[in-house]
Image (tube, one colour):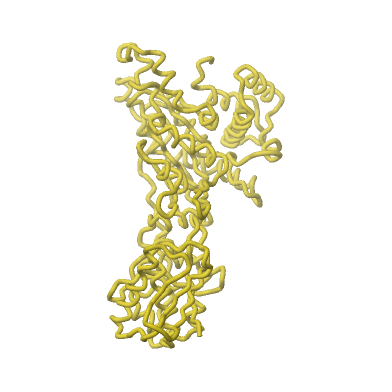
Length: 503
């Protein structure tokens, strides 16, 4: 007779159900695992044997075969230990077979039978709920998995506790969800002296989730401004928090089972590889663009990133998802993020300062900014000049609104967009396209006339034209205007052409 237990295999954020079949048959004693396992899964037989030995359960002198179905799906990771042990215990009639078959399990076994935490408990709980099964996972993962309240989650500390639960000797309590964490920054926009135009641009970017590029000399406040963005972004909605946490669960970024309602803020170093930025590597793990899903991806020293890395951003920015292609699978991760980039105007950074600029001015600036290709530059909605702050201005009192005041305006703008896009797949103005863009972002006659003249004069692409409309719609939302008018278009055009030499 074949005993069955269930677990999951991860394809991106999707957890696919895997049936663990175990059969014993006469023959020379052997323990084999088939079904396209990787090295970690193949080694499970030794961990399972030792863990059962710690419980004084001896394996029979028979041939033991474990099949992981579907057999053509790659199986990776140590979380297959516990389901293999459960299927084997069911085959030996130590635990009821029907109970094991109604459970999705994942967990790594120590040699003494202790259960070790694994990645992906949250997506696994989603899969268990979808198939109307309970979930058994290690105790450190229970609070994370329990956020999916559509299924029962049990979190034992060891294989012996799991065994007593399945035999009814000592049933486990249902795991309780972790706390809602909040690591919102205390950095305040009021700390930034001057740079009122840059603050205004970042407020627009945060409201409509528009991509922004800041260019200015070293020390002008680009990184300082970006670091204060999390303080004005609204918290994640319940659906967004669960969506983002599933990615963070696979990356092992959830601590103590808590779900974070603050929007992600990722800032990779400019030496990061392509796999680190867009995903890949061993197991096709999520990259920074996916870890920033529903949040901000801040890339400082933008032109210093390798050209191949920068060019890989183009498709995820447009599609809102990234596909990590491998020979045996195509793994998809969502990545709807706000890209905020910062750059010096040239290699030395002092292009506009004749006292400190190098002898290669202005060619050094042109060569440096050309590291950002035209198609990638075209995807930045807001291009912001960040000039140096005069030293005497640093002694002046704080100017401009605090982060709390700006955050209130951003939240009001997001509320307008939420009402506008209710019942659709769109969430913010950056998602507008097609008929919806024409319906809500078409400016009045004066605004449209201005935009057409600018498009003709500066050769805006169709993408650039539509991005100006989206930004203008966001400015109108902040202004409390039902329609897009000429002043809104003029401000959006100003940000679009801020770094153009022809202006």
